[in-house]
Image (cartoon, rainbow, N blue to C red; front, side, top):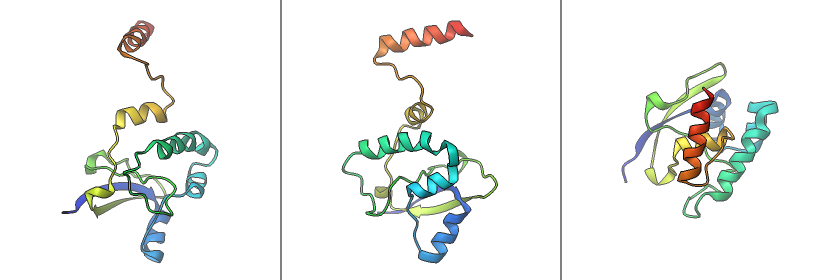
Amino acid sequence: MDKITIWTKQNENVVKELERTGRYTAKKEYILKDLDRHAYLVLEVYDWLVKNTPNTFRKPYDAEYPIWVSLKKEATMLPSAGTVILELKLDPSLITMINIDKWGTILNYSYIPKDKQDAEITDNFWNNMV
């Protein structure tokens, strides 16, 4: 299968790891180091994602977490101090697609309505708050 181009924002140490070993996998220790005192917020939802990812996903044996990638360069997170944007070519079978809006809701600990009626009530509530 043809490879596709993807982009990912990573800590600059990822490049060093790639140069040293030829590969990189996301590990809890890296998230703890990178996010410091906020890591527990992210790790709780990352753990949920890993636990609830379909079994069809082919995760490397030593990868603890997914590596976030963008299918469009302009959708990649903006670079910041100590980070790099990597452009990579991957087999599409290595990518598990997610709904980024739903993931953002989970990552931000936002309320998830139980059904359409609950969503309408919630929307009405917040619309009247403004």
